[in-house]
Figure (cartoon, rainbow, N blue to C red):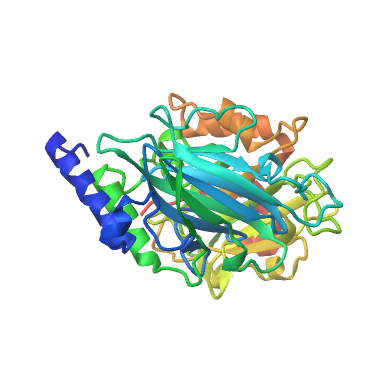
Length: 438
């Protein structure tokens, strides 16, 4: 959808005003401030709080919407807390990633140690500074070497930069309270305006969701573009037109397949599990020798706002440490409705069952890889570099992905429940089911 120029300008002015007045509940005096909320990190993305934009159920995302003027900046100052992975990421109003930094790259406060790098360190503090990008486009240019800069959107034609900053924590080692999150110090023309503490209570997610929906509507991106799925399950990288605008994590790369429900039919996914770090005595990961920092398989409703599936209290995600493995280090997933789960899948200690969720919606099954070791190349990162060709068919990109990832490729098939019950996952790959389109 393409809007007339005057309508697009009017829409953007309306949405900017909506953010300041409705989403952010700002007073008139606050309009001059680069941050338009009275506290930081008011939105928390989990399956129970704000289940949108393909979240991983084993991660927590805290979001602050903000507005920056040309002479303003936001300084983020916080303490480390034990978790497998920690990052800071900026996005534009469409949810496209601009700039980011993560735990081992954080600039430390004087006298601090980084517990992600030093297993004897029990904590420490870090800082980062958000300023408008000097140039347009996504991603933003690399910041100066050694600086703590994280670029936000460029100053627009109306004289401000509007975006989001997100803190991510994957597999936190314990509960993380709002009070543990960083404070934001706001400066304008070199003068400190205020320091904003973390919100004590979360804001209603409805405002954030409504705002994002309006932005997408006026930009013609209420639903991501996509191709017709093949009749079999085929993991491959999302095309660039599909991957942007869903608040992606810069340190993950994804391979994805669509799924359609048929009564009595399940999805089976099998592959070799990559090694990941264990937690050290200080509660932080021991970052040496592992193939990936993190991996997971998650099932989503492929319709805006793209929530992770939930069914009977179970989220449709399994992280690496929640995934059962066989004696050879291979995982087997069964994705099914409660009535379609084979009895021998339920009882098999080497099988991980994920819920299908609501059967009326198409699904997106996403396999994540995070931060591979330089020597480990059979990853979705490599597949995204080599196998995301928009001029190739889904089948060709999937074949390329399988060749790149080798035994680590998540091979998948539809299967009749009765076939699985008679012969296990092996029988499913010998007698695959072809999808029937509605």
